[in-house]
Length: 457
Image 1 (spheres, rainbow, N blue to C red):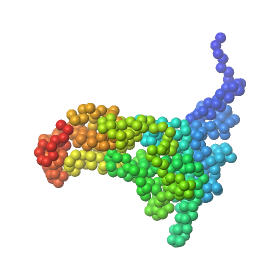
Image 2: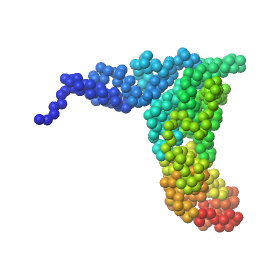
Image 3: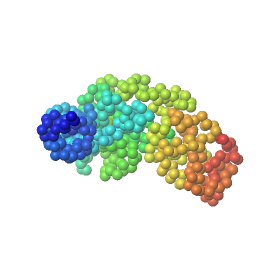
Image 4: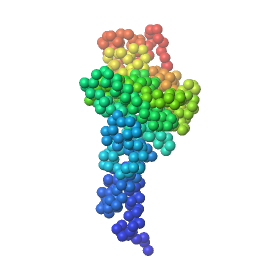
């Protein structure tokens, strides 16, 4: 005899199974699609809407849901410039477990940005081999809690707080008073967290500023330090979770906003790190943990002690090495200008080809460009492989010695007729001020005359 499937309306077991499946759906889009597949499934959902929605919210956000929900509810309630004791607490999910449609929409929006930032954090701070998050559950929870707390801090004490505290007619005395009050409120907020929680927040804040510094930097192969620039302070002042937009599109996204950061510079300067450091000082804690001590959030770094495949130097290890999986992080949206600095001699200023070189390099993805250099390896680099993990110095040397050859290959591939080589090659001075000479001869080559001797041939 075969198995018999009973109709769902006559079996409590089947209804319970459907409820269980609904609770395990990964996000609200899946939930909406599933409950619309049949009236029976919809009816099961209608019997347990609150608990199912809350379960899906946990599946979407993770164990940091209390922190995420606190952020969205405080933001939606416009609780600006309130003392920390007057804000909704992280236990609000227990006090008010029913999620409104507005809660859900806000959670979906913020969780997407936070998850993308987590993957970026994992890639840069834990495992350089993967662009998706490799954080453990504990590491992920610590990162996300810190991220949602930073977003809450920005929502309550950032730009919106400025607008609620300052009006166009405020005199200097009123502005100074507002600044003093703002700093006190911000310090009170950070003072509500334990020192380990503050260390997590500090680590994430530094990571976010590093992303912004990357977008500001012009050094092709060196990741800029996480400096306290006006842009980084302003971004964190407005919305820390939107730093992912800076990573994707550069600093242009700031200029698209409809207010001027210079108007509020005294409010966003040292916006987060100022009050946070004050709390640490009051607790007689060091401002930064020693570099040889375990750092916040990450329990284990994959390949922490790996060395450069070529120089084997111990000055650059682990996360400071570069290979095919993380070449794309090496430069931000300043590539268009900075890559020309790696060209040999004066060929970067060649009147005939400079614009086309910048266009080609800008349109070529980083991993494709760096990987393509290995197709033009000179004899001096025969032992170098595309899969090598290289320190910044070795990678820069390799790029510098092959970038002009790669570009010549791009010209050949598009069908250009390459003229005779100039005797002075990439060192030629005339190519930079006489267009006719730059067009007549090829300068993307080694010099055979002049002071410089041919290299890597």
